[in-house]
Amino acid sequence: MATTQRRLVLKQRPSGMPDADCFAMETTDLGAPESGQALIQVEHLSIDAFIRTALDEGSFHATVPIGGTVTALGVGRVLASASDALAPGDAVFGPLGAQSHLLMPAAALRKLDATDVPPRAYLGALGLTTGLTAWAGMVRVGEVREGNTVVVSAAAGAVGSVACEVARLRGARVIGIAGGPEKVRYLQDDLGCVAGIDYKNDDVGARLSELAADGIDVFFDNVGGEILDLVLDRMATGARIVICGAISQYHDMSAVRGPALYLRLAERNASMRGFTVTHHAGAFAEAEAELGGWLRGGDLHLRETIVEGIERFPEALNMLFTGGHIGKLLLKP
Picture (cartoon, rainbow, N blue to C red):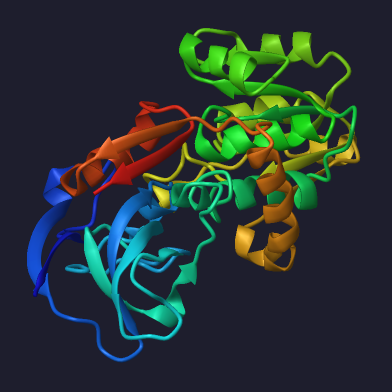
């Protein structure tokens, strides 16, 4: 019996914010898995900023070809298997793409232990592009320590939320920057930040000077642009700047703007390091153990925003850049 697959393909490359004309929906019938394959029903897809860069030629992440399925990490269930490694009903994680079902080699999938956490946690708090990224950036790159004053930009997003919690749970004093009163409340009430700064309504520089009068020890940056310069001007001696991303720059990667105040690094004996999570694969087991312990113990509070319908994938992707969500943004096909 055939399984109907709905998938989103790239029709043309975007200029700026992707719109509906950049994509097309295709429907096909999938047969039974061949040797070594599994038939997967996608349950949730992770909506991540790297997807936008993958729509451009020459992306650091594998470029989506014209006519190709839009890239996305996801979790799903095995419907049928022709591999000894997977059985029907198993929960799996992998590069599932923006589609409802797919045939995929079992070797490209990770079988999940979902006995005490839902599979979608492996896209969020335990996810490669969310929890593991936040942990690697804050612990391995930022070297956060008890008593540090930590600032996180895009703090109400997925990575930012977990970065705030990792720092707090390791004994730091955390200040989050986000857009709008609802997000500031989330930072303070759910994530335990000592304060939230609303970049849409507050004077960010003045608030940083007030809240971090002795300087900022760690800055976990997801945004870039003006906010990075504001923090560079308020660093403590020996500060660590962690460059996780620069979501303010992703719509035109040919004209990325760097910081004007980078000489503060020399003046303050500070450092600025960029990273991608894959460079820290050797620490994934440690990260997942610590994050999983906090999650199961109720100490990690990552909120989820779930968009339903594979046809709404472009809308969900644009929500990352318009601030229309809080916490982890997922799509349920």
